[in-house]
Image (cartoon, rainbow, N blue to C red; front, side, top):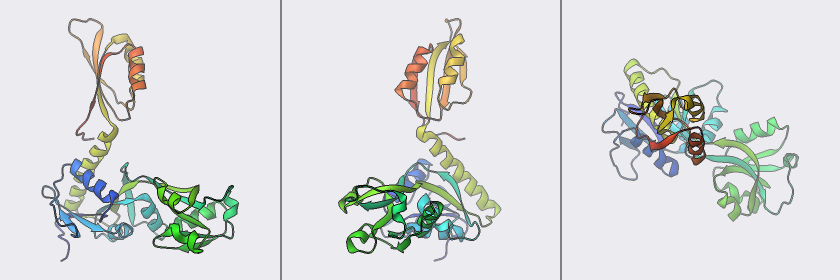
Amino acid sequence: MSPDRNRLHMAIQKSGRLSDQSRQLLKDAGLRLAQGGKNNLSARAENFPLDLMFVRDDDIPTFVADGVCELGVVGQNVLEEYTLGLTEPRIEEVARLGFGKCSLKIAAPDSLTYFNLKMLAGQRIATSYPRLLARFLDNNGIEADIVTMRGAVELAPRLGIARFICDLVSTGATLEANGLAPVADVFDSEAVLVRTLKPVDGPHSEKVAALLTRIDGVIATAESKYIVLNAPEEALPAITEILPGAEAPTVVPLIGRPGHVAVQAVCQESVFWETLEKLKRAGASAILVMPIEKMMM
């Protein structure tokens, strides 16, 4: 069945942590997703003209670049590996989503007591990301043989396929279980929202803009906090300087307390206990920090 061209289409990973977090992102953006069977390849939003396509992670850039899906959620590692194979841009990164963080690393047998990059020269390195690895080696002036594998990269040294590997690492437990240890960082990654560079017609363009506005709001509220405090007027410059990532705060006079004001601000950076202690030392009192459920930028 061909896609409904009256609706937007977004490609996300079929299963796994990135899939779950992508769905949660859309739920936080107010979308109600119809529940289908676990083997379904698509799902429909009930209150927004959007259909989700569940595909392999390394197929997502192709779906978006070809315009089959206007949007997609994919790891930067997959996106960059795909982009390095293009002669001209066909897809663009819209936003970093803050989840799915990992790092592409070169790993060596943990019996190796010393390592430097020059030791890679002339060696065989197994990886599922040959373009990213090739760029890293070129940037460091190293010539090595890249062995492309589509899975089970950690087994390569044990099977004698390659001495080193280059693979994604999150906790490092898989490397450790296979007698390997990370020795060099190649590429840091997290989930990103991408969109096609193919022309999108007027009505669809408006739908894309509306959805991106919602997602921007979800991203903005992830770390944002609403702060309310009381302070003497003369302390306002110092307090404004301390408030993390805040735009111009709202200042309201306190009734019955001449020279004192209430300050309200949205802080778009993390608010730590150290921040509250600094505010108190600057003259603030009755400091209240609250989470923000929704925010439209």
